[in-house]
Image (cartoon, rainbow, N blue to C red; front, side, top):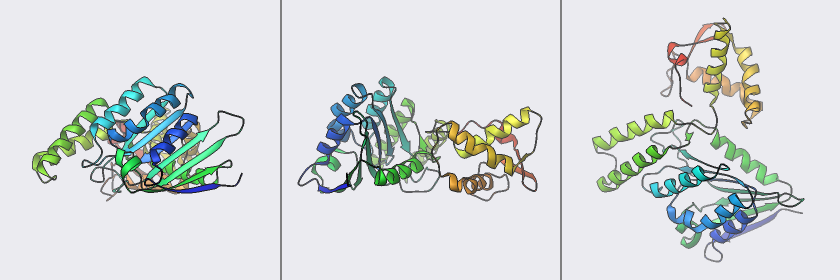
Length: 308
């Protein structure tokens, strides 16, 4: 079947109806949106529940944190689903003030894979609709829908989704984190900004808490620290860059972490440089030290590293 492409505006057919239809048929769902509201979850809740319970669908949602838009009630709703359904996961992408990439997180992606029959079908939706009541129903939104039997566009969008998923900015929030997020959101709304010193202090505490929460998968720096630690226990104190290049891709594959293998050496070298103890990078954690040409060891800080 050729790719079927549909351009849709909420004014002629609400996106919520499309999502509900796709959810009731899907066995795999991946969603990444900048903003989330409880009204958006309420629109698709029954179909989401059906997919999880009846189709045993594997569902992931990544949402951006924006203190003026994403509400804590919506985060609590997703946390409740996650606690009840093992096949559901949701993650947050840290706010620009707090995330590790200094990025504005702004995608609206909905990916559906259906394998209930002999043939697998793929549906991808990209456009302007966030997972909010307005975004799915009443706002003037425009979205493109791709339906395929062979996942040409789906695969490209899934690669982008995985690029989001495996960044250091993505984490799985705890109930306590969501409570604190909600409290700070109320303070920001009341103060109409973050200029207040007490709010800035709370934001810093929130950032520190984020760093301790688990991500979608161990980061490259985490995998490098683990590998060097294991070698240290064998009595090997200095690890060659070639050994790191050889080992880390194997660990990514073993953990089913989907990253671009054609550029993985550049990514590894980038992490080593960024977190080297003499690095000037503003986000350096000073985890590694060069002990010779192409040789690395862990700093004392790295030996007790518990982050992502």
